[in-house]
Image 1 (cartoon, rainbow, N blue to C red):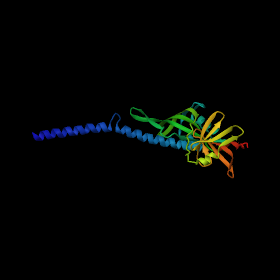
Image 2 (cartoon, rainbow, N blue to C red; image 1 turned 90 degrees about the vertical axis):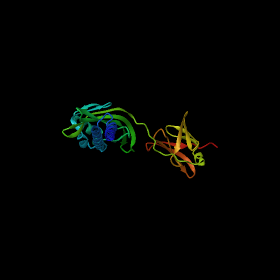
Image 3 (cartoon, helix red, strand yellow; image 1 turned 60 degrees about the vertical axis):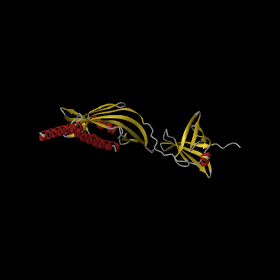
Image 4 (tube, one colour; image 1 turned 180 degrees about the horizontal axis):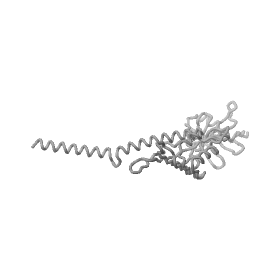
Length: 274
């Protein structure tokens, strides 16, 4: 009788273990499908990365190799382009034309890119990759700067054993939000005081006053806060603007205002009336 109860207990324990295992590994999607989704996501992200490498280097031949012959490209500003020949022509006549005066570089927005598998009869036939990206513009003779932001959705299909993009949606284009990467440092109050005064340039007249480890800049009725990156170099946290105070000896004579690294204004210091 004891042996019978032991056998029953063993069967119950095995059944319980089996049920727990099912709960852990199969909460609604088979483990095999989960692994397959992960594999597909890795493949699509790799293909996506290679395509954008070609895009950033303007290698139109390599770019074209990622599209199917019947690819369709939907752009909310540039319209619809149908077919690979038309798509290749648009690359060569637009952003990658030989005599272009600018260069675009694309970066994905970290944490926004997702991949979704497409199935029929539980067989994966394609995938969608979607996310956000930003574009940096380099104009001839100028420094690169952050220019635009957009959303993207690309449909990939496995055709004759090769993954190719068949539909591309590029939309919600607009200006990119400026992300300040500069780090503020501490500048002694006596140094900040030396920058106080009125300055005048071709476009604006500004007044500088010292604050608590910052400079306050007034243009008309508007007040802006400037943070120190170096003892004589200050920046705005809202835009890619820097303000370099230039001295002759110990006397501050002007401010060089730069936007995206380019001088856009020279503010000469007014001499205080005696």
